[in-house]
Image (tube, rainbow, N blue to C red; front, top):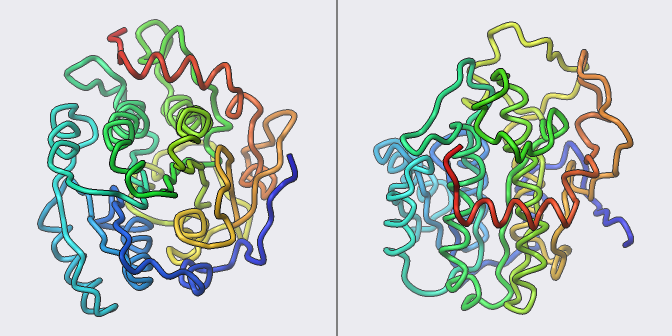
Length: 315
């Protein structure tokens, strides 16, 4: 396949990549939209005319963001709905409450590098539960709505952190290996890419495009655990603003340039190049931020993850 590039790059903003997008009459959901990249993604989609639902844990924070988006864009079709991705019943309730077609789904919410092993009541490691399993259940549950949307787009927000680890199928939840915050985060972000690969293959006949993206390094609430020693440092100049961090997500969600593209992984507004081995992470370089590991695009691994996720076994 030919690598996809665009006129945009690492310093482009979400508003710039959406300049030619008209989402009037389209309905969108953005998870984790009460702060950071999620808020900016929702704001730009609303500015392009979309009816936007902010799917959030904190309804008060979400309502404040929604009001701010309406004030900034003039779009009154911005609403808030509760969603706790670590709780299967919350995901099921959200799916059941959705009525009508859906045109854009941005699986943006996430947690990163939890310093200690945390398990959900189901026995799932929390980063894997929130970053992958919750979004998997949400997106699969909303598939009929996406199919009804006609040409719907799903954006799975991953990370260059996927290079920290493949999905370790024999011990997804760290029952038999020592817990490491970055390995846990890495496998959850690899799962986000594999989900895009798996969904693209399964849902092409529904006209649903599914892609994964890396926002880059953006100082948001997601990085709150990084004050602890981690061995991870950044090359000078790699940090992005929130507006720049949301650009690749919005590009895949709304830009006419990506019409019909599916099953790929993008960073800095272009399809990422494959890497033969993990680049150095001390400091993290531009090559690390942009590359994609072969294991994250492996169709066999995507199929295995899909089956594991459907049953969400306790291990």
